[in-house]
Image 1 (tube, rainbow, N blue to C red):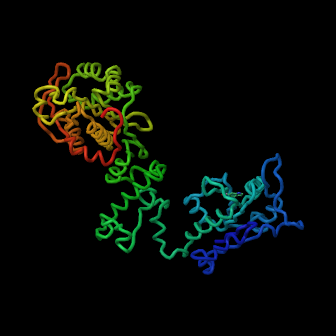
Image 2 (cartoon, rainbow, N blue to C red):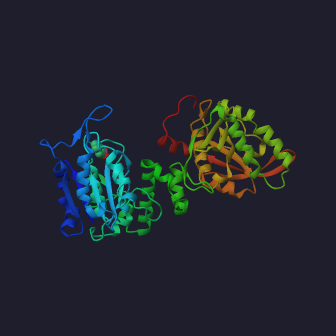
Image 3 (tube, rainbow, N blue to C red):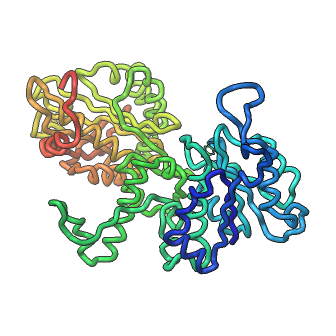
Length: 475
Ligand code: JB8
């Protein structure tokens, strides 16, 4: 490949004699030529700039000087449309399109690159226009490295040359390292790189992660993938939004769920879901959510009328408003996706430390008090099985673990769920709930067979203290 760089500071690119790019030039893989723009000036002062039409600060580079320079560098064949190869004219500018690995890969397939490095306030706009519209065999791209401002295009030229050169055949010793890299869009979608370690195994009191010293290749690969996912969530959530769910296995999804990203059924990408306390103005949304979800969790023998009556009594906006405002008796956590609320939990607090939960059959199964009831855990169907319920339950339990009733911290979170709803039970079990025994539960005039499950909040409390700041207000 041939690359020409035109600049008023051609020495800026002297660094390209060094290292891999220098070697590629000496090996004849890269024909890199620097040019001093002032060679195409005609006045005694070798002037390249002038004041901007329309006024304003700074100076603008003259199109006539740039035109002569670029015509010469491109050569008569390109200008006449008689060259067969692909020539790309790159003009670095803060207002250019972003230079990405994808663009770099595209540029590496060109036959010639010409980099026009501006200074001052930039190059008269007619230059890019002219080569775009009047010279058919030249492709013009105005490019930017990122959202910050440099003093000229030379650094961008250095970046382009280095990024392109390492993709040229024969330049890199080990081409395998190309496919593994961040931004290389390897299999599994583009993620940031995992952290790397080398000897000594302990440095400055820090040990390298044991898994990397274990020699267990499967565990190493999984650990690295977890690290890459976690890093990408924290540093580049935009890249998580661009992941293809088909490239995410169960372990990937579990890691993402722990970081607050979930893959709803039928979605084309993971979405961020924030778990937070519900607000009074969300009664309608939560009521809608409950009305849509509750029937799906009912056993088939339950009549539509009974379901409707239950929804009207317990899940109406008015009741939901109570849940959201009466914080002495209720705690609500919601799951907020970009599309809106997709799930919530309701915890009912006891009024006294020893208040027997509910009915006798439950009271016998929940001896460790104070005990609060996890009364609802509703999640829209497309978010079921994604980990949102688990995240909600975790937040509800953490919040409950911090609640005291007359100075006594809650010891148990209990719930009743339909005995045949094994999926719900499995989901609760995953969050640490254990089955305590059966109870019956009335919906309308139907008596349903339920199981009671309990979560020990006293062990939860220690987890919570390490991970969440002390709560404000009532606790
Ligand atoms: C004048 O920040 B940059 C950049 C800044 C410039 C010029 C070109 C590029 C020309 N200032 O990428």
